[in-house]
Length: 291
Image 1: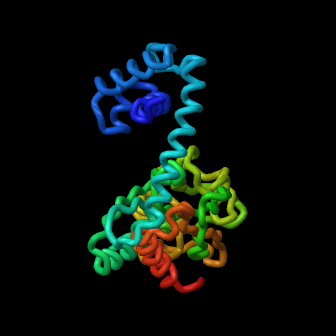
Image 2 (image 1 turned 90 degrees about the horizontal axis):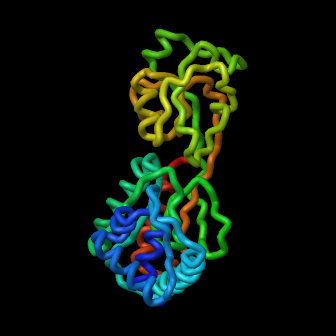
Image 3 (image 1 turned 180 degrees about the vertical axis):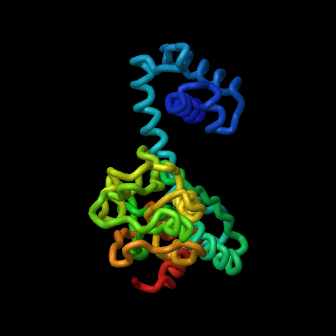
Protein backbone atom coordinates (compact mmCIF):
# COMPACT_ATOMS: atom_id res chain seq x y z
CA UNK A 1 0.00 0.00 0.00
CA UNK A 2 1.47 3.35 -1.07
CA UNK A 3 1.63 5.77 1.89
CA UNK A 4 0.69 8.84 -0.17
CA UNK A 5 -2.49 7.11 -1.30
CA UNK A 6 -3.13 5.69 2.17
CA UNK A 7 -2.84 9.16 3.72
CA UNK A 8 -5.54 10.47 1.38
CA UNK A 9 -7.65 7.39 2.01
CA UNK A 10 -7.50 7.92 5.79
CA UNK A 11 -8.51 11.56 5.42
CA UNK A 12 -11.54 10.45 3.41
CA UNK A 13 -12.45 7.86 6.05
CA UNK A 14 -12.35 10.54 8.76
CA UNK A 15 -14.00 13.34 6.82
CA UNK A 16 -16.58 11.32 4.90
CA UNK A 17 -16.51 13.65 1.89
CA UNK A 18 -14.07 14.55 -0.86
CA UNK A 19 -14.26 18.20 0.13
CA UNK A 20 -13.57 17.45 3.81
CA UNK A 21 -10.59 15.25 2.98
CA UNK A 22 -9.22 17.83 0.56
CA UNK A 23 -9.49 20.56 3.20
CA UNK A 24 -7.69 18.41 5.78
CA UNK A 25 -4.79 17.75 3.41
CA UNK A 26 -4.85 21.15 1.69
CA UNK A 27 -5.17 19.61 -1.77
CA UNK A 28 -7.96 19.73 -4.36
CA UNK A 29 -10.91 17.34 -4.50
CA UNK A 30 -9.85 15.93 -7.87
CA UNK A 31 -6.56 14.76 -6.36
CA UNK A 32 -8.44 12.98 -3.57
CA UNK A 33 -10.61 11.24 -6.14
CA UNK A 34 -7.60 10.18 -8.24
CA UNK A 35 -5.71 8.86 -5.23
CA UNK A 36 -8.72 6.85 -4.11
CA UNK A 37 -9.21 5.36 -7.60
CA UNK A 38 -5.51 4.40 -7.74
CA UNK A 39 -5.68 2.74 -4.34
CA UNK A 40 -8.86 0.81 -5.16
CA UNK A 41 -7.30 -0.37 -8.43
CA UNK A 42 -4.07 -1.49 -6.75
CA UNK A 43 -5.96 -3.39 -4.03
CA UNK A 44 -8.57 -4.77 -6.39
CA UNK A 45 -11.37 -3.84 -4.01
CA UNK A 46 -14.03 -1.19 -3.59
CA UNK A 47 -13.23 0.77 -0.44
CA UNK A 48 -16.25 3.07 -0.14
CA UNK A 49 -19.97 3.15 -0.77
CA UNK A 50 -20.99 6.49 -2.27
CA UNK A 51 -24.13 7.54 -0.41
CA UNK A 52 -26.07 10.84 -0.25
CA UNK A 53 -24.61 11.32 3.24
CA UNK A 54 -21.03 10.86 2.03
CA UNK A 55 -18.41 8.15 1.65
CA UNK A 56 -19.01 5.09 3.87
CA UNK A 57 -16.23 2.45 4.13
CA UNK A 58 -17.06 -1.02 2.83
CA UNK A 59 -15.85 -4.08 4.80
CA UNK A 60 -12.73 -3.99 2.62
CA UNK A 61 -12.39 -0.29 3.37
CA UNK A 62 -12.58 -0.92 7.11
CA UNK A 63 -9.75 -3.47 6.86
CA UNK A 64 -7.71 -1.06 4.74
CA UNK A 65 -8.31 1.72 7.29
CA UNK A 66 -6.85 -0.43 10.07
CA UNK A 67 -3.74 -1.15 8.00
CA UNK A 68 -3.43 2.50 6.94
CA UNK A 69 -3.64 3.66 10.56
CA UNK A 70 -0.73 1.37 11.42
CA UNK A 71 1.24 2.94 8.56
CA UNK A 72 0.31 6.39 9.86
CA UNK A 73 1.49 5.54 13.37
CA UNK A 74 4.80 4.26 12.02
CA UNK A 75 5.35 7.33 9.87
CA UNK A 76 4.51 9.70 12.73
CA UNK A 77 6.74 7.83 15.17
CA UNK A 78 9.67 8.07 12.76
CA UNK A 79 9.03 11.80 12.33
CA UNK A 80 8.84 12.38 16.09
CA UNK A 81 12.05 10.44 16.67
CA UNK A 82 13.87 12.44 14.00
CA UNK A 83 12.60 15.64 15.57
CA UNK A 84 13.64 14.35 18.99
CA UNK A 85 17.33 14.54 18.08
CA UNK A 86 17.02 18.01 16.54
CA UNK A 87 19.13 20.48 18.54
CA UNK A 88 18.35 23.53 16.43
CA UNK A 89 16.51 26.41 18.07
CA UNK A 90 14.44 27.09 14.97
CA UNK A 91 11.44 25.68 13.19
CA UNK A 92 7.74 25.23 13.92
CA UNK A 93 6.22 24.19 17.26
CA UNK A 94 2.48 23.48 17.40
CA UNK A 95 0.82 24.38 20.70
CA UNK A 96 -2.77 23.66 21.78
CA UNK A 97 -4.57 25.29 24.71
CA UNK A 98 -7.85 26.86 25.78
CA UNK A 99 -8.34 30.53 24.97
CA UNK A 100 -8.16 31.50 28.66
CA UNK A 101 -4.82 29.72 29.10
CA UNK A 102 -3.53 31.25 25.90
CA UNK A 103 -4.61 34.77 26.78
CA UNK A 104 -3.29 34.87 30.32
CA UNK A 105 -0.26 32.58 30.17
CA UNK A 106 0.81 31.41 26.73
CA UNK A 107 0.81 34.74 24.90
CA UNK A 108 3.17 36.44 27.38
CA UNK A 109 5.28 33.27 27.63
CA UNK A 110 5.62 32.89 23.88
CA UNK A 111 6.35 36.59 23.43
CA UNK A 112 9.32 36.29 25.80
CA UNK A 113 10.46 33.07 24.14
CA UNK A 114 10.32 34.69 20.71
CA UNK A 115 12.59 37.51 21.88
CA UNK A 116 15.20 34.93 22.91
CA UNK A 117 14.72 32.53 19.99
CA UNK A 118 13.44 34.41 16.92
CA UNK A 119 13.95 31.35 14.73
CA UNK A 120 11.11 29.48 16.44
CA UNK A 121 7.64 29.92 14.93
CA UNK A 122 4.67 28.86 17.04
CA UNK A 123 1.37 27.65 15.59
CA UNK A 124 -1.14 28.22 18.40
CA UNK A 125 -4.55 26.51 18.36
CA UNK A 126 -7.12 27.53 20.98
CA UNK A 127 -10.01 25.18 21.67
CA UNK A 128 -11.75 23.37 24.51
CA UNK A 129 -11.37 20.12 22.59
CA UNK A 130 -8.35 17.97 23.44
CA UNK A 131 -5.79 17.77 20.64
CA UNK A 132 -4.31 14.39 19.72
CA UNK A 133 -0.56 14.65 20.28
CA UNK A 134 0.09 11.16 18.91
CA UNK A 135 -1.29 12.23 15.53
CA UNK A 136 0.77 15.45 15.71
CA UNK A 137 -2.25 17.75 15.95
CA UNK A 138 0.06 19.53 18.40
CA UNK A 139 3.59 19.15 19.76
CA UNK A 140 2.67 20.63 23.15
CA UNK A 141 -0.66 21.02 24.91
CA UNK A 142 -1.76 22.83 28.05
CA UNK A 143 -4.62 20.84 29.58
CA UNK A 144 -6.73 20.61 32.72
CA UNK A 145 -6.67 16.80 32.55
CA UNK A 146 -3.58 14.68 33.09
CA UNK A 147 -3.29 12.16 30.23
CA UNK A 148 -2.91 8.47 30.97
CA UNK A 149 -1.12 7.52 27.75
CA UNK A 150 2.36 6.05 28.41
CA UNK A 151 3.67 7.82 25.30
CA UNK A 152 2.98 11.27 26.76
CA UNK A 153 4.94 13.25 29.32
CA UNK A 154 2.89 15.43 31.66
CA UNK A 155 4.31 18.16 33.87
CA UNK A 156 2.18 19.79 36.55
CA UNK A 157 2.10 23.53 35.98
CA UNK A 158 -0.08 25.01 38.71
CA UNK A 159 -3.17 24.44 40.80
CA UNK A 160 -5.58 27.27 40.04
CA UNK A 161 -9.05 28.12 41.35
CA UNK A 162 -12.36 29.34 40.04
CA UNK A 163 -14.82 31.58 41.86
CA UNK A 164 -18.38 32.74 41.38
CA UNK A 165 -18.66 36.21 39.82
CA UNK A 166 -21.21 38.70 38.56
CA UNK A 167 -21.07 42.21 37.17
CA UNK A 168 -21.57 44.98 39.70
CA UNK A 169 -24.48 46.24 37.59
CA UNK A 170 -26.12 42.80 37.70
CA UNK A 171 -25.90 42.61 41.49
CA UNK A 172 -27.27 46.14 41.88
CA UNK A 173 -30.29 45.16 39.79
CA UNK A 174 -30.86 41.60 40.99
CA UNK A 175 -29.16 41.32 44.36
CA UNK A 176 -26.84 38.57 45.59
CA UNK A 177 -28.10 34.96 45.50
CA UNK A 178 -28.89 33.10 48.70
CA UNK A 179 -26.70 30.06 49.43
CA UNK A 180 -28.55 26.76 49.23
CA UNK A 181 -31.27 27.98 46.85
CA UNK A 182 -29.70 26.51 43.68
CA UNK A 183 -29.40 30.12 42.42
CA UNK A 184 -33.16 30.59 42.35
CA UNK A 185 -34.23 33.84 40.73
CA UNK A 186 -30.91 34.41 38.99
CA UNK A 187 -29.48 34.14 35.50
CA UNK A 188 -26.32 32.17 34.79
CA UNK A 189 -23.76 31.85 32.01
CA UNK A 190 -22.41 28.33 31.49
CA UNK A 191 -20.43 26.25 29.00
CA UNK A 192 -22.17 24.33 26.26
CA UNK A 193 -22.96 20.85 27.54
CA UNK A 194 -21.04 18.95 24.84
CA UNK A 195 -17.71 20.55 25.79
CA UNK A 196 -15.11 18.63 27.84
CA UNK A 197 -15.07 21.04 30.80
CA UNK A 198 -15.04 20.54 34.57
CA UNK A 199 -18.43 22.20 34.88
CA UNK A 200 -21.34 19.97 35.86
CA UNK A 201 -24.64 20.68 37.56
CA UNK A 202 -23.13 23.13 40.03
CA UNK A 203 -21.11 26.33 40.11
CA UNK A 204 -18.48 26.42 42.86
CA UNK A 205 -20.44 23.79 44.76
CA UNK A 206 -23.83 25.46 44.39
CA UNK A 207 -26.42 23.61 42.32
CA UNK A 208 -27.91 25.78 39.58
CA UNK A 209 -31.10 23.80 38.94
CA UNK A 210 -33.31 26.78 39.83
CA UNK A 211 -31.39 29.33 37.76
CA UNK A 212 -32.29 30.55 34.30
CA UNK A 213 -29.58 29.90 31.70
CA UNK A 214 -29.02 33.20 29.92
CA UNK A 215 -26.19 32.06 27.68
CA UNK A 216 -24.23 28.92 26.79
CA UNK A 217 -20.75 29.60 25.44
CA UNK A 218 -17.91 27.60 23.94
CA UNK A 219 -14.93 29.38 25.51
CA UNK A 220 -13.76 30.74 28.82
CA UNK A 221 -13.02 34.20 27.44
CA UNK A 222 -16.58 34.54 26.13
CA UNK A 223 -17.99 33.29 29.43
CA UNK A 224 -16.11 36.01 31.29
CA UNK A 225 -17.17 38.66 28.76
CA UNK A 226 -20.85 37.68 29.08
CA UNK A 227 -20.66 37.84 32.88
CA UNK A 228 -18.90 41.21 32.70
CA UNK A 229 -21.68 42.48 30.42
CA UNK A 230 -24.21 41.74 33.16
CA UNK A 231 -25.88 38.76 31.53
CA UNK A 232 -25.67 36.57 34.61
CA UNK A 233 -23.56 34.80 37.22
CA UNK A 234 -20.68 32.62 36.09
CA UNK A 235 -17.80 30.50 37.37
CA UNK A 236 -14.52 32.09 36.25
CA UNK A 237 -10.83 31.47 37.08
CA UNK A 238 -9.92 33.84 39.91
CA UNK A 239 -6.67 35.00 38.30
CA UNK A 240 -8.73 36.12 35.29
CA UNK A 241 -11.81 37.60 36.97
CA UNK A 242 -9.94 39.51 39.68
CA UNK A 243 -8.16 41.48 36.95
CA UNK A 244 -11.40 42.51 35.21
CA UNK A 245 -13.03 45.82 36.10
CA UNK A 246 -16.65 45.68 37.18
CA UNK A 247 -16.72 42.06 38.34
CA UNK A 248 -17.62 41.23 41.94
CA UNK A 249 -16.88 37.90 43.56
CA UNK A 250 -19.87 36.21 45.18
CA UNK A 251 -19.24 34.08 48.29
CA UNK A 252 -15.43 34.54 48.33
CA UNK A 253 -15.08 31.63 50.74
CA UNK A 254 -16.14 29.26 47.95
CA UNK A 255 -13.84 28.13 45.17
CA UNK A 256 -13.21 25.14 42.92
CA UNK A 257 -9.61 24.01 42.37
CA UNK A 258 -8.27 22.66 39.10
CA UNK A 259 -4.83 21.60 37.90
CA UNK A 260 -3.02 22.67 34.75
CA UNK A 261 -0.72 20.25 32.92
CA UNK A 262 1.85 20.70 30.20
CA UNK A 263 1.77 17.66 27.93
CA UNK A 264 4.14 16.60 25.15
CA UNK A 265 5.01 13.40 23.38
CA UNK A 266 7.98 11.54 24.81
CA UNK A 267 9.70 11.41 21.41
CA UNK A 268 9.85 15.23 21.33
CA UNK A 269 11.15 15.72 24.86
CA UNK A 270 14.71 16.40 23.70
CA UNK A 271 13.88 18.57 20.70
CA UNK A 272 15.50 21.94 21.38
CA UNK A 273 12.75 24.15 19.98
CA UNK A 274 10.02 22.18 21.79
CA UNK A 275 11.94 22.37 25.06
CA UNK A 276 12.41 26.12 24.63
CA UNK A 277 8.66 26.63 24.24
CA UNK A 278 7.89 24.26 27.12
CA UNK A 279 10.34 26.03 29.44
CA UNK A 280 8.81 29.42 28.61
CA UNK A 281 5.32 28.16 29.46
CA UNK A 282 6.49 26.59 32.73
CA UNK A 283 8.21 29.84 33.74
CA UNK A 284 5.05 31.87 33.09
CA UNK A 285 2.90 29.61 35.26
CA UNK A 286 5.55 29.73 37.99
CA UNK A 287 4.99 33.49 38.16
CA UNK A 288 1.43 33.00 39.46
CA UNK A 289 1.38 33.23 43.28
CA UNK A 290 -0.23 30.36 45.16
CA UNK A 291 -3.78 31.22 46.38
